[in-house]
Length: 269
Image (cartoon, rainbow, N blue to C red):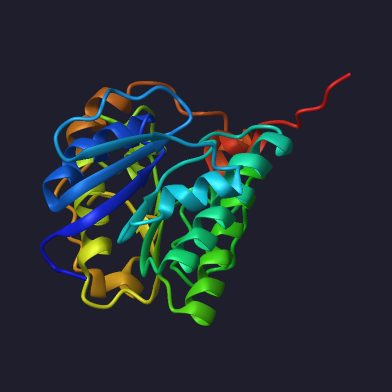
């Protein structure tokens, strides 16, 4: 893979908030950027291909992956939802992506995992890539499955993957927890680029966070990526800290996954 340019890069989840950011920021590093989602997307611009694709449909995903040299996989449900919804997009979908990659010779994938894979670790506990996974819901379970699936496809088929455990990627942190988990859009782009162009990727788990003052996550095992975050949540501290903290008895104040640890169950009458 060229260290400078990817011929055809597939970006799934391109209609989502982070997909829109990466559509703009990854475009200069590609000859052709193939964009996919089930939701409406802006029309294709120069050097772009726009493809509507349901990740739960294996034949459609297989055709989507055909001809691509690398994949940035953001597609799927991005919040805690009933298991049946998570199953279609996040579990079947990631399997279809990796099967398509195997069939069509794609050698490198950046998988948008999540901090919710480790959401039931305590706040203040510093963990690394080798920590026990403690998903905080169906969404976190689906990302844990994606990490295991990607490891299998690396061990068996040699498909390299970076599993990016994204913290909280928004224009600015919204609460005290996000002062620790925040990932700026600029640092998100830099991290994805590092994953795409690192000379050797293997199977890497990396936490997606900016250079915030406080940290729960240790990225030393991903040092080979060369990712050096440029932003910090500190400029927003004075804006966030006046809001009262959560009650100490609230699970969202005790566990790293925040509010996700208490979302659901989604029972129907």
